[in-house]
Length: 245
Image (tube, rainbow, N blue to C red; front, side):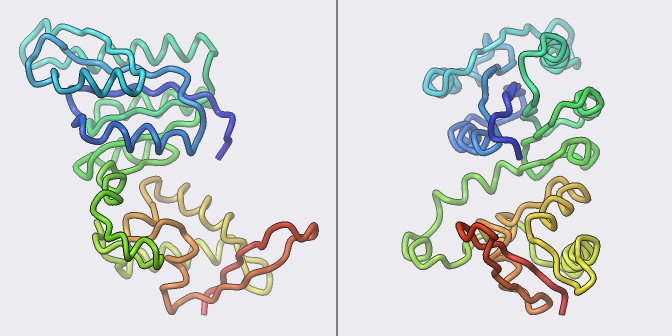
């Protein structure tokens, strides 16, 4: 993750509910600075009117795109053309594509071929081809979980009550294999390296999907793993290492 990454945020307004926008923009700032923020849609349609105040509050520029032909998504085409124009302008080094539509799979692939980091955001219904075409994919539903969290649970650092997925044997296998792949000769792996490797294998992996804000408490909750804290050479921070039991 590069903190000074300049990110172009392109939102499919016809495909994403406005209720997620505040949490979504806060999430994006974790990965860089959103220098370009645009949302695409036919703003003459009544169902998009709820976006007005949200766009003003978050300084997002609405791009008008009329639907010229029935059954064709003109919004997708406009967003793709803009993305390529931004790419060639060399004003950013990353993109965040916000949609649950698989039509942006090729765009994400093309941007990564041009050495852009690509973050995807969409609902759980997002098709897998678009998810795996991104460097990291975040489900919008997990960004709204904080609103439903019990304040007592938050203060006591308990896991969230609402989980989008169970920790299945498939997930355990992914974690164990990633630890093995990143481990040294003694079987210990730096947790930061493990997290990066997991994302390369499965871009939509997020500890929040399982009710944990960070990767460390997720691993701590699983009996299959052993964790160890180690001091850095400068003594300023502690590093977390993980090992398969």
